[in-house]
Image (cartoon, rainbow, N blue to C red):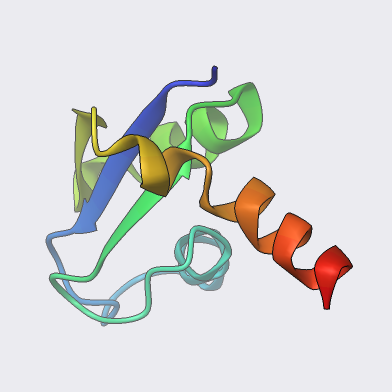
Length: 80
Protein backbone atom coordinates (compact mmCIF):
# COMPACT_ATOMS: atom_id res chain seq x y z
CA UNK A 1 0.00 0.00 0.00
CA UNK A 2 1.42 3.37 -1.00
CA UNK A 3 2.00 5.97 1.67
CA UNK A 4 0.23 9.30 1.50
CA UNK A 5 1.25 12.89 2.21
CA UNK A 6 -0.91 15.90 2.97
CA UNK A 7 0.24 19.09 1.24
CA UNK A 8 -1.08 22.51 2.31
CA UNK A 9 -0.37 25.78 0.52
CA UNK A 10 0.71 28.33 3.12
CA UNK A 11 1.42 31.32 0.86
CA UNK A 12 -0.52 32.97 -1.92
CA UNK A 13 0.34 32.61 -5.59
CA UNK A 14 1.16 36.30 -6.02
CA UNK A 15 4.82 37.04 -6.71
CA UNK A 16 5.39 33.47 -7.92
CA UNK A 17 7.03 32.58 -11.17
CA UNK A 18 4.97 30.93 -13.89
CA UNK A 19 6.85 27.70 -13.30
CA UNK A 20 5.98 27.67 -9.59
CA UNK A 21 2.32 28.40 -10.34
CA UNK A 22 2.27 25.52 -12.82
CA UNK A 23 3.81 23.17 -10.27
CA UNK A 24 1.28 24.17 -7.61
CA UNK A 25 -1.60 23.72 -10.03
CA UNK A 26 -0.18 20.32 -10.94
CA UNK A 27 -0.35 19.41 -7.27
CA UNK A 28 -3.98 20.56 -7.24
CA UNK A 29 -3.42 23.63 -5.05
CA UNK A 30 -5.19 26.74 -6.28
CA UNK A 31 -5.76 28.95 -3.21
CA UNK A 32 -3.98 29.72 0.02
CA UNK A 33 -4.71 27.20 2.79
CA UNK A 34 -5.85 24.61 0.24
CA UNK A 35 -4.90 21.04 1.11
CA UNK A 36 -4.57 17.85 -0.91
CA UNK A 37 -3.80 14.29 0.04
CA UNK A 38 -1.45 12.77 -2.54
CA UNK A 39 0.42 9.52 -3.03
CA UNK A 40 4.05 9.76 -2.00
CA UNK A 41 5.72 9.03 -5.34
CA UNK A 42 9.08 10.28 -6.65
CA UNK A 43 7.28 12.56 -9.13
CA UNK A 44 5.12 14.18 -6.46
CA UNK A 45 8.10 14.42 -4.12
CA UNK A 46 10.07 16.31 -6.81
CA UNK A 47 7.21 18.75 -7.35
CA UNK A 48 6.96 19.34 -3.61
CA UNK A 49 10.71 19.94 -3.33
CA UNK A 50 10.62 22.58 -6.07
CA UNK A 51 8.09 24.70 -4.14
CA UNK A 52 8.82 23.53 -0.59
CA UNK A 53 9.16 27.09 0.71
CA UNK A 54 5.43 27.61 0.02
CA UNK A 55 4.08 24.34 1.43
CA UNK A 56 3.45 22.49 4.65
CA UNK A 57 3.96 18.77 4.12
CA UNK A 58 2.97 16.08 6.57
CA UNK A 59 2.55 12.35 6.46
CA UNK A 60 -1.08 11.29 6.19
CA UNK A 61 -2.38 8.18 7.89
CA UNK A 62 -6.03 8.66 7.14
CA UNK A 63 -8.85 6.17 7.06
CA UNK A 64 -8.48 3.11 4.87
CA UNK A 65 -11.48 4.18 2.77
CA UNK A 66 -9.63 7.29 1.60
CA UNK A 67 -6.62 5.23 0.58
CA UNK A 68 -8.75 2.92 -1.54
CA UNK A 69 -11.24 5.45 -2.87
CA UNK A 70 -9.94 5.44 -6.46
CA UNK A 71 -9.96 1.65 -6.62
CA UNK A 72 -13.48 1.44 -5.18
CA UNK A 73 -14.73 4.12 -7.59
CA UNK A 74 -13.48 2.07 -10.54
CA UNK A 75 -15.20 -1.04 -9.22
CA UNK A 76 -18.50 0.83 -8.87
CA UNK A 77 -18.23 2.13 -12.44
CA UNK A 78 -17.70 -1.37 -13.77
CA UNK A 79 -20.82 -2.62 -11.99
CA UNK A 80 -23.02 0.16 -13.39
